[in-house]
Image 1 (tube, rainbow, N blue to C red):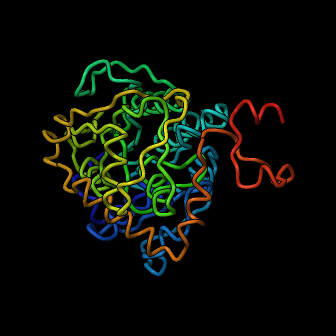
Image 2: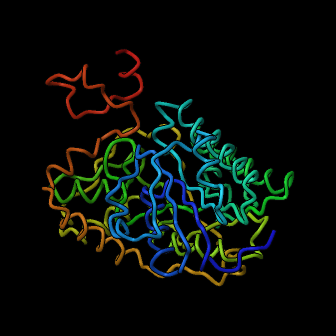
Image 3: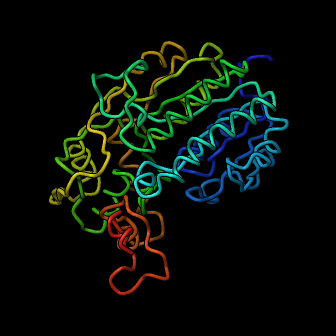
Length: 364
């Protein structure tokens, strides 16, 4: 089995390729490389067809609407594949209200993808994990040998998924790379429901004139990287034979507190008067993240290029150009976004548009 040295001419499968990060990976492949084909597998739970609109008429791109847990789907898609880039997952806050489903997609789905990749004889499985496998930093910056003590079922399931991927390599000889991106932001990111992340949620709230919402002290820190840099880093790893068998962190190495993020967004939106509103701490919230990306740089020479101020300004402009009003966008950004969505049959004048906290959902 030959090693991948370039994605030019390769038949690439991207699971979760209609999602936020996945669609940018598809962009990077079709814009910057010459693959023979890029097949996206996405069940469209969080992914969107419009994220792939640029390539809808490109004969190299195909979308298969399917579930990564469905072995028949994965066998059919991977039959002639050279490279699998596995990004399909459900998010961290989803795991707080639906831990079994979250585990099923993130862990069991990863095992299914790995076994299908093994049986298809693909030349590379790039498994995309998450910095959430670490939990809160015990030291910083965090290298790949930092202890893994996930705070949530999401983090635990992502850790299981990457362990399954490594097992595919060690037991069956499948060429595998595990990537651990830290926090990613940028265009196509989610502001709505349990998928909503701090940067897009804060932008849409401020655009509508609402104060940003932080949980606990607001001093939690993250390592934010622009999605185009994340996508470029994943492509660089996929073309690096020296990375096979490795687990590799992706991030900027710059640590930023949530309060500081709100200040950057306030400047970009033009609302420095909107001070953060502090709410009780969110369950399972990681306190500190900051990457050591030395291994990534040594293996690939890759480094992020987009400054946070520029990336946030671009995202603000993207929301403003969305064709939707600020109030419409803000209404979708739940104040507490880790509860189960209210079923339509239960909505009334007091519950419409809300997401119930876990205790409220259970009481229903």
